[in-house]
Image 1: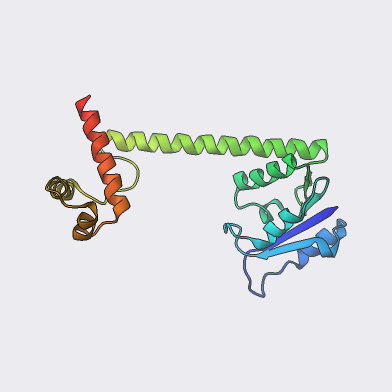
Image 2: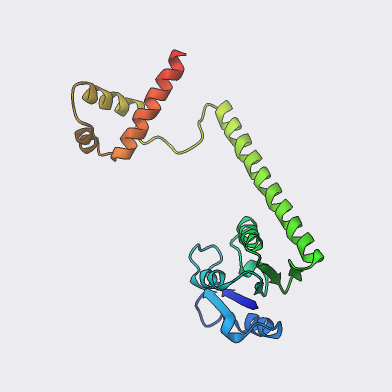
Length: 195
């Protein structure tokens, strides 16, 4: 059975799914098996897509008009298609002529997978190079510390003199999780300095 999924980026009257609907119906999707969303592709919550995925059974085929209607990004798209394949569900994109039930479609899917893996490797490489360059300039990557060295000294004095962590959090205007992170970082740094 063919199940169709359609998506437009906004709920305005200027965007509608008519073009996608016509193409999916022409492909043989039953009008009762069409699911749609009116939301940006970047959004995680797309109830229409979730309903379509829940409706699919082994042997079915999910049909979309175009690849970008399904996934937020190439890795997200591959994640969905890989999950479908594991469940014995085919995938077909009409515009790109990708049909995972054919050798041609399987090849395209594997090429997309390789490209996504390459993209992740490049991203990781750029991040590591940026962190190394920052490190050479004396800057550390990651989130900036909320508690500076002076404030941390005062906090440690308070704790050492018997103040509770709850009172320290109230007095210094910090969250408990922030205090615990700072204390853990402090103990890790002191261990590194000792060794």
